[in-house]
Every structure is written in C-alpha cells, then in structure tokens.
Image 1: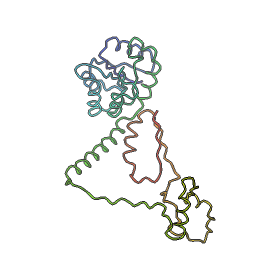
Image 2: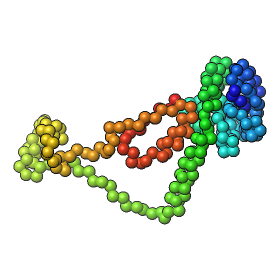
Image 3: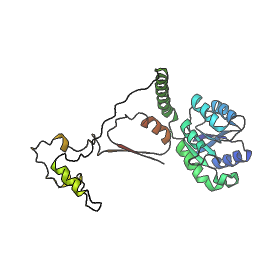
Length: 261
C-alpha cells in the first residue's frame, strides 16, 4: 500500500486527485495540504510514502517546500503542475532539488486532469519505489566536495598564470629541390595540388619487426578510445546522474553517452 499526501492550493484539484487515488487498491490518501508550509508540516506528522506537490502555492511555493522536505525528511516527490513541463526552469530545478518525476497538467487546465490519469498513476507508482535517502546521501557528499573545492579556489591568491600549450606541427614544405618543384606546380592557379597527407595511405604496411620512426607514428588516440560507456536512467535518473557523472575522472579514456527517460 502506497500512503500518499497531496499538496495543492486548489480545493478542486485536491478533490480530483483524492478521488483518483482512492479508486486504486494500492494507494491510500493519508492527507492533503493547501500550501508549501502545510505540506512540510504534514510530511513530518504523517510520514507518507509519496508526496504530490504543486509548484504555485501561497505562503510557501512548491519548490521551496521541496528543498525543505528533502533536507529534513527526504522522500519520493512527484511535481504536479501546469508549470512543470519538460524543459522549463521549474522542472530542472525541481529535479535537481530531489523530485523523482514531474507531471504536467493537461493543457494547464485542472478540468482536464482525467486525460492524464494513467500517467499520474504510473509515475506515482514508480516514484514510490525510489530510494531517495540513499540517493541524497551521495548528492550531499558531492555538494560538500564541490563547496570545499570552491572555497579553496576563493582563498587561493589571484593573478595571471602562464600555461604552456602543446605545439602543433603541420606539414612542412621540402627545403631543397623538392620544394622548388612543388612551388613550380603551384605557380599556376589551375595547377593540381597534391595533398601530402593523403599520399601516406599508399605507403606499404610495416612488417612486425619494423620499428616506425616518431614521424611515422599516428596521432595518439589514448587508451580505451574504442570503448564507450552507456548510461540509461529512468525514475530517479537525474539524482543518479548527478552522483555518477560528477565522480567520473577528467582523464576518462573513453566516450560517455547518457539517455534519460
């Protein structure tokens, strides 16, 4: 049984959501909240398994309430609002604060909530299974490490630093007879110009016992250049990605691709 708390400043929306969840055998509505502050207090009192949280509410909005709840009583939260549409700043901030998922009210109208009932139920069931406490532990550790790094940078003496960049050497023209011949070919604007880099493709393959010179060696591609790390995430993905990606080494010798449902 999933014990759910509904936080929304609209009495009509609270009634619609309450009726929706009460019809389901695996949900139990333990209470409702009319604003963000009320939601924070009800979470402390009722200890629900899941919270649906609106963004625009009086007294304390949903995003501020979410930040407090995740700090005091971490739990699965699904944002439900006409504001939380994919790609908006509110959605990104809600997910970064710890929300498991978001649901956009159909067309921004509460009167059309019946068109997304299956979406609401599916996402709430999935969110209720998320281990928020464990995920937040890693997030806080990462945030602490980042704050310490920024503090060190702030305390370090400021000034100009000289950085030696690696020099790139391109193809150089021959200096003797070959150079004169090449310059003669280039005298006419219609003369065919040969690409000396492409000419290397016709060179014979080295034998196993041959030792190539440094000039014949190809550009370094790094170890693991033929490998790829693929990460796929769904429910709870934003938190998991924040924990994983921030811990990848800067010299990771392979590519990384991420798919977030």
